Length: 145
Image (cartoon, rainbow, N blue to C red; front, side, top):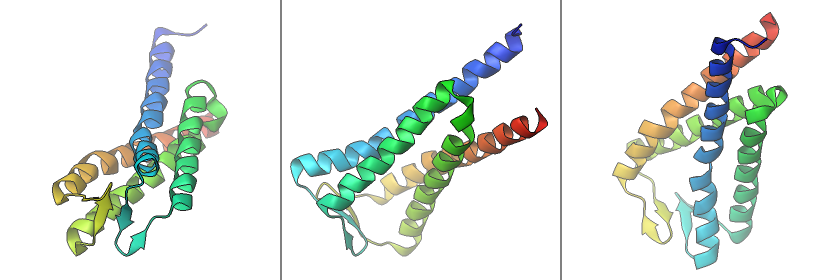
């Protein structure tokens, strides 16, 4: 029989994976909108091609799908959480580097502001750390039974 504490814990972990799935939507939408409008996406000296945006959309779709599946399937939770964590932290480091080095970042033909990079750091980086912590807690739970 499931206790109230177990039910609450299950609800929170399901909510976490729903939020993790949603967290990738802006990244996917950015590439989708860029393709629809034919606008630019430039990171430093790298000018994203149509193919690159399509591949990134596929990548984000996989992350979204993994997190949606993880809402109900415990077997994929670790890989979904660790993947989301690593890639969110990677985005955080990208924006930290941008603030320190100051390389060009253009989205939809407009310069991405330094304030926007700071906002990304404040939201994306901590969420990545939370994802990593949750992934290791899930792994420990599996090992301990």
